[in-house]
Image: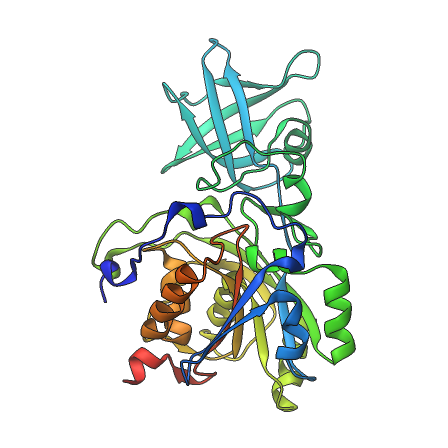
Length: 355
């Protein structure tokens, strides 16, 4: 398949610029990847759409205030977007400046007397390695001077509300520079209602990097190089998945990040706890082994995430569903509405490959 196969027209006014009044006020488009059936629901209907014994797998990553503005020792201004915190004092970052700093350069953040220093240690491809000096911790700098890294299609400055709304209610492990947006629709009453329904839940961590917004530049998808993201899958989650399978329940991934983590681990053989990095690129024809259903937001045209959901539930089905969503004026992207997708099932290839 070609990149052009994953394009679609989207009126700009459908790109959500603000969150809905409440988390569960989002709409929910349900798509069955086997029958192709489409149903318009509300996200608050989710407990009725899942069965007792189903298992929700959620990403507990926490979005950090990853965007920083600073000045060089020479006075030039620059902007930083943290890609990954490596340890207490160092981070890999994207850096925008009129002239890129050289190794050994001093970078300044904040204002005196709270100003902090960092040293640009080296270039690593398109990224810069920064080391914060004088015992200053990266996360402390971000908390004090950082800003919520809203996606580029949200055309406004971050506001105080974004610090809570661009974060899931179950966020725990800091490290992401973009939200696991499928999880933004959950609030505690909905989680309680799902539990009362008999729907279990478990967690994993995948720290979403800025590479999630990296465009696919070549029409030949085989030439695209995926970005790496760090994941951790605990033993308790593996056991929950095994129990669910044994009892005939379905594994419901909340977000493409959960899908990528589970399917990346499963490609190595039996599902096992651990941590590592994944650059798994899921396109139509991929054989899903773990995930039965997926909750996800609507994705950008020509994006790797649109390719993933097309692989899961069928390219033709996704095209029809997205046309329907545009016609019905759904809200798109991070602060937009959601989809509940039913795929071809574990151990089978996606519908496009089967045909």
